[in-house]
Image (cartoon, rainbow, N blue to C red):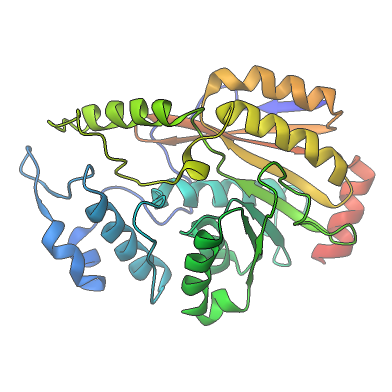
Length: 318
């Protein structure tokens, strides 16, 4: 197994193609989404900002970002569902694009089909992938309510409607089974796995987040970015989920060029690498990402030999 990773971790930098550079232009965002105006207030430093501990403010900010940068006419999620930070999600897409460029003479492949494992009610990865690169997406999820919400977003925009297909995963223990057909080829998979091992862990994480935001009433825990149980936690947390994904990906080794997932906890990397070695992954890449003080990384792997990789890109991307 060939494993490559950056020698120096990236911190406080976002991808150069990411549209979300620097501070939010709240004036411009409020013009795109007038509902944002009521949430914009001076912070303790006297700068205009929003209260990031307020779930409604965070959701409205996302609506503004999607309207302003991606020309999305409609975006909403049901109450209590995950409202992801868009700059970080955009970084994942841009970084994984650079991985595929390696196998296409440095050019961005245009004929890509990407599977978003656990697309959620927000459908963020497909939105960014379609709007930025014109790719096709399959979004899978175990929650019918999430898929209904995502479909409503898709139906609001002609680009999304022609490029995204949603699939219900009927078995919560499966990841690729029931989603990828045996005769189907997928160029790439992306995933934001459930981070926590239990609701108690999720609440502790939220308390830490609110404390970092200097929120006074951290005793009353509310998930400011929302999230249902299947979005935020699962038995064994991120570590077990990714290991199950790796094990199942072996069964689809010839159906997909690159599998990938976000890994939030650096401490999980050793076990993930061991699982990939056990499953005989041929090539593994670790791509560091940084958002402010938070460092994370993408781990990507393939079971295709160098000859199979070349044939894949020649057959599908030319």
